[in-house]
Length: 332
Image 1 (cartoon, rainbow, N blue to C red):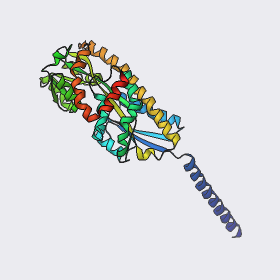
Image 2 (image 1 turned 135 degrees about the vertical axis):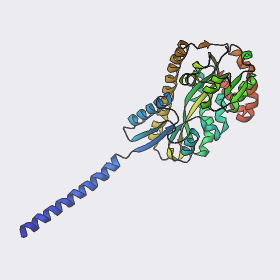
Image 3 (image 1 turned 180 degrees about the horizontal axis):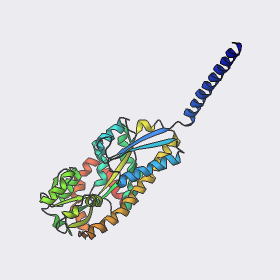
């Protein structure tokens, strides 16, 4: 009996030591392997350049942080519409978002969409990545939204069944626009008949002649096969549209300076990655549209700029004359 009792004591002691070792080891593991999780939502499909860019951001963050920061990506509006995802970030329920619908919080973010504000992509990037981009982002902090970079939707162009070589060619044309005041005002200045409608209804509206034309970035025309219902792609480049990337300010303040720096640097790198990818793909898309029979028109843009100057006067009151003039000075 004595032998059995001694064996039991040894076994119990060994078990106790093992449990202590496991407890200590688990605590050490939790301390050394604590991970900062970033949930990042966007509205594009997994085949879209935006998703590829966000996945690139994920790689950069995890590499630069040696795995101490992890990014979970939610594409294709898995977490709601763009407006809903921005709201989730403002409530700190979601950490990051790349979306277009920020004007619901402050209209001044739309200043970059003034017609013919930028002559090139490089001008737009220089402005967005500099002091003006930071200035326009500041008002969003009051809504817990820190805009830390700008992806892009790019320049918008007109597709139509008649060539658009001068502003007069747009007169009286019924053109679908989004329900954005700037877009509507731009085509009113060009004496068109802007007709807002849902994007999902557009292909059929073009096919049935409900509208004569539409305006979008090349990628939208390409992916939605507008060459089947439109003869001309007119490179009017009438508006540039950025795509802000925001992080929850409340979440941002929980991060160390090193983590903040990693996120900021990675966002800027990813923004340029996205822009370069879009440019490369846009060139190949135009070639494919041309191969499908679409005619590409490259009009002289100066007359279009002159016709839309009146839009600036009306929107200076909304955006602030000082802000508009500072951008104009930056790009001169």
